[in-house]
Amino acid sequence: MRVLVTGGRGLLGSATVRELTARGHEVTTLQRSPAGHGPEVREILGDVTDAGVVRAAAEGRDAIVHLAALVSMVGAWSEFERVNVGGTRNVLAAASAAGVTRLVHVSSPSVAHAGEPLVGVASTPADPDRARGNYARSKAIAELEALSHDGEALAVSAIRPHLVWGPGDTQLIGRIAERARQGRLVLIDDGAALIDTTYVDNAAEALAQALDRCTRPEVRGRALVVTNGQPRTVAELVGRIAEASGGASPRRHVPFSVARTAGAVLERVWARSGREDEPPLTAFVAEQLATAHWFDQRETRAALDWRPSVGIEEGLARLGASYA
Image (cartoon, rainbow, N blue to C red; front, side, top):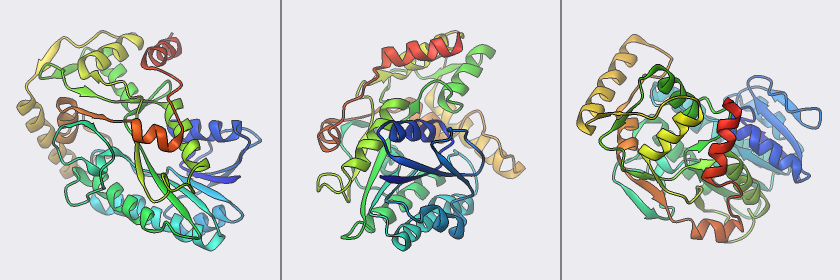
């Protein structure tokens, strides 16, 4: 197929482009700065908030993987709405105008997370009213809007990869590595909460499978959570990522109530000062690190005919090799 990938420069976007190209698809990417995917990939520079650019990028495409999003734990609602909601609307309008027949919308499990532990659950409906924070709320609205466009002319599915990581990740991995090297890595409570994660290659393969199977009744019009299906404690994951990056496992602990309060205070300080970088902690991050969230993957694997190809052990070995 001729596929447009929005947000093709990031960790998951780059892996998805590689996977689609390896499967023989003709790939075009849309992102704000060059990604250097190679001569076989056509790159268009622009922003998903620019309807004209999105419309031009979608012209002549059979399918779209919509990855572009504003991902941050802080920031004004207007920006999240403009990029995540408005950008998705632009993609949907462009798909309709160009006669695109398949759309995979990349979402997040946070769209259905209301702060309670998620223990072995399957995909539940996105809930903007209960989603925690502007990012999750905007992604919930965007997911619902995307799925509402599933119809005879356009098959739409939403894939929610959970905590994607791998070599080159500047978000989860980069922050853990930096704090481990500085001796500032701590655990909230005892770090015993079980959480799922997704190695980046597995997430990319799941997105490619969703694109291939988007027209099937078990996939179209639905949201599916994707993970490695290997829950680990926060303490184990953080410690092993720190060690793989050349740092030390955390030895200090902070009570959840203290961490959540500190995170909320830092959020207010960042908002008032207008800082654009991420604070070292937010209330949402504290909640995520202290609350179990792992998912039943049986439905996802059956629907996508997919299994993770890279386990956590192999992923950590690859991460260690990248730092070495």
